[in-house]
Structures are given as structure tokens and as C-alpha cells.
Image (tube, rainbow, N blue to C red; front, side, top):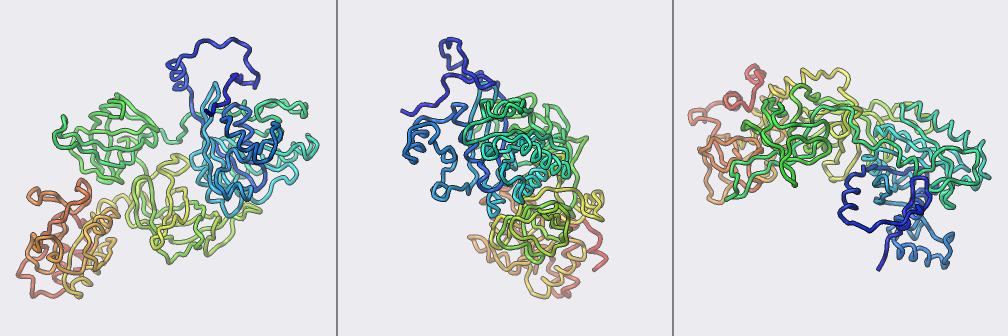
Length: 604
């Protein structure tokens, strides 16, 4: 049976403890493990700088590698001595990685010491896999940037430092590797350290620690090096154990993106339970606290906080919870629960920094989707402010962004989103762009704030004043066109389709648009009947019981519920013109508070 190399225990300074071990207690061991904090870190650097070798050496020397794993990578080299171990293969798990001797995908490894638990992401160094590096570093609290002492800073090193700056990583380690190839020169180390600090200083104020090491031989990884007496700083492991690892969020205000609405099964002891589940992005919440549901803007108080382990009186980031409220509010996936006193910003025109992932360059004419927190919304890239040159870090004009490019863009979402700037909140300030045609992840982005000319208050008023999402079935090309024109003049986001697919309709409801379906509702449903008289326009209502006065929105409706239909035009309107009938539909939509802008009246 494979055993883990954890005995004898290693002290923080890397020396074995000479104390006689006490009798092992599983309860005490688990209690001690729960008291440890967790540090997430990632490695980055150019190709062949020694990232995988460093992690393999760190795992081996800290006694966190199984014996059979060590034997397997030793046999591959045909030797049995410690020096013959291929430490890189302890982390490079893909066959292609072993064959080519490079890292391709992100490899996550867990290890532990007496002081702390760690999750380390070994990210690739090749330029074509920069997107994998950005993915691996996105959750890191600390980044280790490896630099080959024989080469110094190269373009890929600069790109990785820039990405860590965009991601808001506050702790950086300049691991200047392969010191054995420069005769352990203090002069070489000091020169590269100063270049690195100058680079970081241009981008922000992250804390920098520079460590000279030889990953292959283990110098200054876990044990202090005897070949660099001029270096008096910590080893890599000592620094990792000492750096602060608390959950960092610039915004202490409560934020909970709702991922799911939990309802009990029939016969449950609490038949009226309605919990809004999600992971707390920032801040904390107590039973009795006042919260606001967005985008409705309605306030309530927290009735209970439930978790897998039971109810709590309070909870904080990054816990996953289900919250119930004192009042019955219409809340669904994609909505936010926030602190009443400190709500997030709201806007549809945003400025953001992006790292372009897709092989297809950014095209301002293409349709993209923005995945933000627990919601997905259509988005248009309005323009590119600049692209960042990795050679000089200067901003340059660009009409597009290619794979691995970094730039700043202006974008406009189909409906306003609620956010905090990324510098304040990494969860509510981050997003990914999805190519609507190929479904490929096109880019990762960090929201910087409102776009030039944007106004948060005006956007909030537009979000609450223009319209709610709805699905309207319309007969006749003339009426469809007239109604589309009326709604567009009212400032609505409108989609036209001929597809009679209730699943598609639900998805469009979730995007916050008014969908005009060309055709008759009587083409829908197993009984071949509609709930309203077909007079040219009908409203689809997704509610399990039409007698309850269902709503057109998707929230709170079962995923398999078929819609009911309600006529929007009286029979006497059948002979009216298309423009007149469009005006009547708009009037009825205002009565139902689906359309709230007075612009439609002006157009009519």
C-alpha cells in the first residue's frame, strides 16, 4: 500500500523534530486540521523556467508525495538516487505533458504542513496557453513568478505579472530559479530582483518577496541553501507559511448572488420553506438584518440562515448558505441579495479589462454573452479603448484583440447588471465572455467601472422604468413589425423569433428581453388549445396555475411548466391598423407593468 511521506514531521525551519511522537488520535488530528487556514497560490513564468520542477521539489521535501509516485518517476529515469527523480513529472499528469516535457493544462495540487493547508495551481508557461494561466490564477491569493536566472525577465514574464495585477493578487514571489547556472551570483539576483520590483511598481502596489533558489537541487525551497550565504531571507516554504491567508475582499458589504431557489418536496415538515441559495461573495449577514433584493429593489429582513450542517445565526464570505426572508419576494436565479445600506452599482454601459482567450479575434459585430455571478445576459462590445503592449506595457490603439491579448473595452449589456468594481470585489466584479455562436469562452474580464458617459442613477431608473421580460405571440408580419418598432422606440430590448419552443422562451426571459414570437399560441400545448382568444397577440404566462394570475417572468416557475396564454387585444381591435393595434398592446403591457416607459405612448 502506498504511504505518504509525512514522517518525521518537518518544523517550520525545515528541521526534523527529535521529540518522541505521542499516541496518534484521529479526533485530535481532525480538530487540528480544521484549525488550519488555507492559502491558494499559483505559479507562472515563461516556458522551461522550472515551475513544475519547483512544485515537485516543494511537495517532495515537505513530505507530501506518496512513495509509489516517487518510485514511478524515478524508474522512468532508470535510477534510484534522490538526484535522479524527475520532479516535474510529480505534477505533469497528462500524457502529452510527459511526452513533451511541458505543462499544458492547469494542475491543482493540495499539500499541508503543520502550520497551514495549501492549494497550488501549476499553470503553463507557453504563450499559447496563457488563458490557462489566467484561469489558474483567478482564485489565487499569492502568485509565484518564476524567472530563469540565465535569461532574466522575458515577454511572457511581463505578461504574467500584468495578469496578476489585473486579477488583484496582492502577494507576489519572484522565484529566481537556476541560480546554480550563474554560480549563485548575488549580483545577478539583485539585478533581476530590482527589474521585477520596477515592473510591479508600474502596475500597482503588490507586496513583492524575491527568493533565489535552485528547484532541481532544492536550494531555498524547503531547506536554506548553504551555497548562497549572502541571502538571509526566508525559504519559499517559510514564506508561504507566514504570508497572510485571510479571505480578502475590498468590499465588506454583503453580497449574495442567488444561484437557486430551494423549495421543499411534498410532505416536507416545512412546506412553506423558500430559501435563496448561493455563495456569499463578500461581507457577512445576521438573522434579522435588512437586505434588498435586486433588481426589484424590495427590502426585507433575514428570517433564517441554513447550511448543510444546520441553521446559523450569522454567516460570511465565502460560505454557501440558503437564506429565507420575512416577506414573500419575487427572487430567482441571477438576482442579488445585498446589504440595504450599501447596494452595488448598476449599469448597462461598462468599462472592463479583458484577457482574450478565443482563437477567433474579438469582432465588434459578433454577438457575445456575459456570464456574471449567477446570471447570463447578452452583451455588445461597443469599442476597444486600447491594447497593452507586453514589451513596454504602454497602451496602443487596436481594432481587435487576438488570443492572449490584453486590453480594455467598452461594452453594453442588454439589461443592466449589478456589480462592484473588480478592485473592490473579485466575485461581483469579474465575468467571462461567451461567443453566442460557438459557445466558446472568448475572454475573462474584470469590471473597472462605468463607461465614459455612463450614469449609474440613470441606468437604475432605466432598469426599473423601461420593461420587464416577457414573451408575446404575435400573428401577422405587419403587426410584428409595428409592435417591434413601438417597443424599440420605448427603449426596450426586443428579440424576434419564429421558434415555438417553451424552453427557448424561458431562456430569453432570463436574459431580460421582450421576445416577439411570430405565430399562434394554439400551435403550443398538448391539448391544441390556448387560454385566450386568438386576436393577434397573446402574452405567455409561465405559472403552474393560471388562476393565480401568473407572471410572464421565469422566476419561481417550474422548469417543465408549459405556458398559459392571455389575449392582449380585444375582438373589436381586429379591424384596426397594425400601428393602432401595436399601440393598444403597449397600453395593455403598461397596465400589467411589463412596459413602464411612457415613450411608447409618445410613439403611438
